[in-house]
Image (cartoon, rainbow, N blue to C red; front, side, top):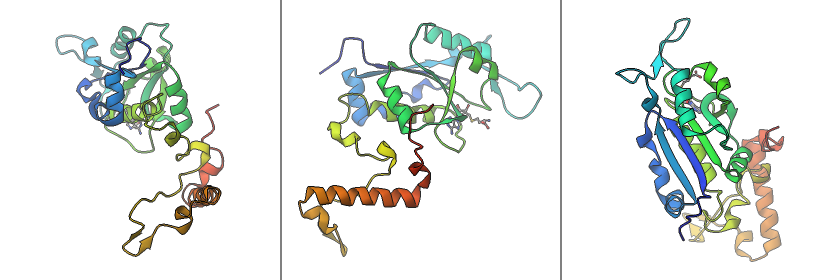
Length: 239
Ligand code: SAH
């Protein structure tokens, strides 16, 4: 069914590379959801607001140093053209300096009207536009990408799969890694024996209580071993 009530989840992305969108999100579950109108993905070129004959968007850093910085006036013009001041959507700036993205924040974003995302390039953006346009810096992890586009695609993928009707079975979202502060238990499927490795007997016995207890114990053991920080409640909603 195609959704034409205009109430789909709306993503607007400001980027120097609009061709990167929807990119991989045009395929599979997110692509089907896009075709149905469950969400929309509008990519706008920051360079449309560039200055002069060359549509310049960047300039050299004040105080010197390597690289170029995205200009605050150009970026503000792009933001103002993309979203009116009363647009209810959060304005995110993909940035390695941001608060690390976690599943609780993804869930909150998916429950809202959508997002406006600014993708940085070069050394980053002029600090003044972050305050002047109320941008919330969001990081996808402690490493440095060459631009915000792949970070934006990552955030959008995480949000879109949570939209109502996007994943086949509603239940497949509720026991996953990070939900409930635990990593997920291991999965198995046929064949029952493979290269001398058998599926654990408890999963083949049909005792649903025993299966649930085994999965819970596995999730706790894997979390304790790999991510002890999650046990301290790091998936709680941000304050
Ligand atoms: N000089 C900056 C890095 C710039 S990388 C610094 O040291 O902090 C260029 C752009 O890529 C950034 O403006 C940002 O939009 C994006 N980016 C890089 N790493 C990212 C990450 N881990 N999470 C989100 N965005 C990232």
